[in-house]
Length: 444
Image (cartoon, rainbow, N blue to C red; front, top):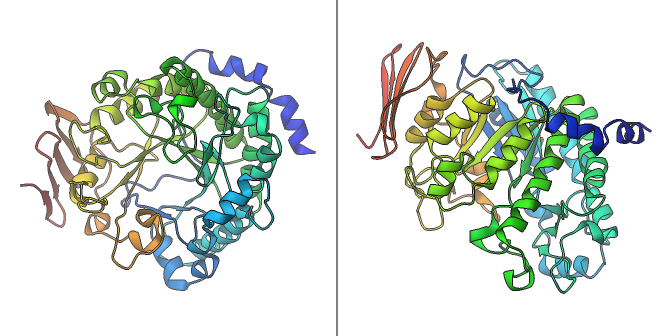
């Protein structure tokens, strides 16, 4: 079949030449034309949607108002109960593995058809969800990894390391790379061939390598006491993970899919170290850049906490990625008070302004929050956590050049129809729209 032919064509040996060849700046162009200067490039990433909800005309209309639309698989009805998790861990998967591929394909067909048939709809990109750290219990491919436990991560007592919703991948295991390509990546290509999917979001592409100094994977049964892994061991694991996703990007591009890779920390080495991380992402990004494929860097918690806070990604870092590697960003922000302790001290205006400072072709932005009406576990990603904001209704136009740094943490940038200023030190922002005149302010 096609998978077998592909398996022999794209062997690991062949792709080594792609990884370690001359550095080529990536264009990162998906199959659709970027409209992010004609109107604001808003993104929607539903998390608790269900199939009946996707057939709702108001929901379809709202979703396709955004230029980039994604759906996760975590419907409230699909969340597994603790006893089901225990049964799966013991080897009983009856009624447990959910064929999310079919579920997603049906929803994306509805979205694509609605977008094409509805005047004013802006949706062009449609991305499916996949987990990059563990075998998530919502996909058929998970069966293969549970049937082949040597591909999963074990501690020093030979116990599989379990996350609440799946078993952790061991990217360094012999045969893992080929297995991942055949059973996860080809699964996405199959899904793209039968639906409107033209992009894929991978959660936690650097999730394993950045654990030190955080400790063991949060929420797993494996403790640092039983992992016996040094910081170098984690870096080696992340390097193996990055090589897999470099190869995956090449294949996904070939089947018409634009990968979006989520990183949990700063890429630039100096920025990363200043925030207490080992800068393993610098190694990972170099490997991904050598794939010569097109992909996007997904920022979770974009500008949360602003300047100097560990999870507050700075403009500096985004510009390093964009200018050095040609990688566009997809930014997911949260407004003030949407964290469990209200620790997210930015606003929509502030994070939109920071996004405009670094915007390049195929950059997208989203902001979501916990609304009182939202239910479910991941409420920041649920449908009702996404609202339409006034900043989205402005046509800022194309940038008239790169952002200018006035002083440490202070940036300005001019657009055809706006002037933007962000002060990351004081957490202030000013978006001055020229025509019709309008101003958005934060902290001023």
